[in-house]
Length: 349
Image (tube, rainbow, N blue to C red; front, top):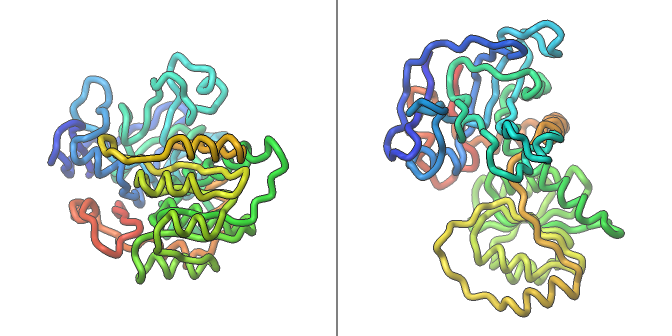
């Protein structure tokens, strides 16, 4: 069968390979791959900057943003032939740490977890793939065109959960949220904010096109000024930072209302210096009881939350987030960024 593979650590090794069809093990689903999303992590792996092949192998099947249809399911698995599914990316470490032992493997303490399509486990960019029934989530049949957005939605479902957990250490009724970045993560964070009835604002650099249109279609407000000025004007109780740009991160941290919560979901590049008034930042954090948290990955609970959020969303709006679909045999096009891209996917069927 066709599968998109890479040799982690080697640039320009992304290739379409002919691999044996997988055989499901006990408790596993056999799934027909329909679509995979391409994100920054995939591009880093393809560029040789990141990723680990399965033990004893040089190649890794890439792709962690999955969408498939069940071809074969074990009895009593809770799944049936024809079900639309997405697969959980991370698996707990074998030791396990305290968090992994309790199903919170997105919070693994010792780093020995594995991840489909990223770290030591094959991903989903193949015509067929297998997944343990306990690590699959059934999607509403109406999500066939947009279910590939499940994994990025889990990232923001977890972010919102963490924000609520932190906020509820005291009285917490936020009204206004600022999302910095209008890529897939930022726009999906805005979606979940509107689903909670919040006043949502989104900041990005572009002034026209698909991103501002998507924000306005949510009933949210789009901004393209400096993060410092926008945050100071809005004084949001919550900021979800989805750019990873260091200057935006610190500007957002300095512009929240008292008891403000900043959730960082974008990973900043290392090796870049930035001058920051650390004293003033520390003073504001302490005197206003502010909190800055990082959030990455997701566990099964967040996949279930994401599936519900997508089922409740306007399918037409979600469809507009997928700005390009590329066939598997033209995979290279999916790893080349175009100006109007929001989410690019690779079709497998």
